[in-house]
Image (cartoon, rainbow, N blue to C red; front, side, top):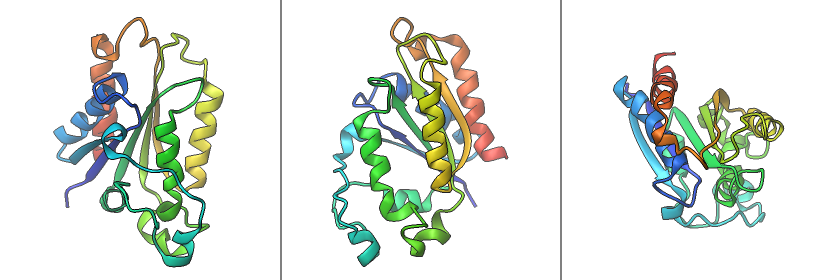
Length: 187
């Protein structure tokens, strides 16, 4: 059975540092035989959660848009990438995560527990600031949040200094990122 891995680029830019980084991780997974696909938040128009609890009452989200529920259900792993804006994930990343409530949170929606518990997750952060530790406390918080949602965190990759040196110009990154992708398949 072929492993399926999806990437979600939570940057408003489809060809920026975050997109390039996710693509390299997926490329590494693809080279090991995984089926991969990247989605860009800028192209999906995912709407924010309404907090209506319709998902708990009716079994699925009441918002009809391009949220990746079917893709997530079929995926073995998710690579979620976000640039750091104002010391946090982008609004697009937060919207995506809030919408996971409907299908990923077994404590609130027990009917979905079987298909979602233990999905592998790679978190990717890109930041202009060159200090890789600058937002560590926030990154640790997000990692813990996903662990509470019962994701299996495989890697948290921080790419710092992208303001002065774009990710795709750093020779050291390609091999590192492709190894992360291949490790998702070869574990």
